[in-house]
Image (cartoon, rainbow, N blue to C red):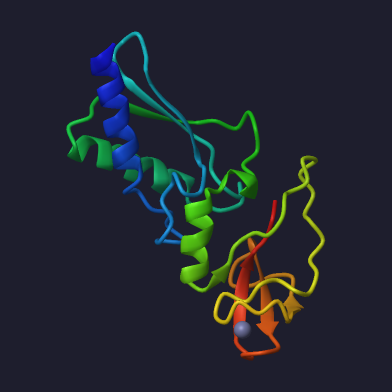
Length: 166
Ligand SMILES: [Zn+2]
């Protein structure tokens, strides 16, 4: 029992080092993409992964990166299962993940997503990650990727990406 617990802890440590291909400062744990790590009856490590935006083509890359990271740490055999039973939402992002995102220059999702899966209406007043002013305006519903919107701060005049709530 303790041995299993120890292996699980190691697994979470390794996952903390696997970063999102699009936002390298965030780990898959920061994003809340890991739904569970367990040993199955064949003593295989099973990682359940719910990718972020299903339109993002990074899922296969991410599965390969997780597998490689586990193998590099001697944690084998490992299976990465894509779990689509619930759609990923920005609500699963950790507080430390949101903080890292802001330091990276992207405004983290603000507020809660709609459980029905529709996009939250975008409004002015998203906090600027540069100067933390709320005096910002929406420039475009789509920023550098479809997952983000483009804003401009009226105080420091910087434009910035906002990670939309979904
Ligand atoms: Zn600003």
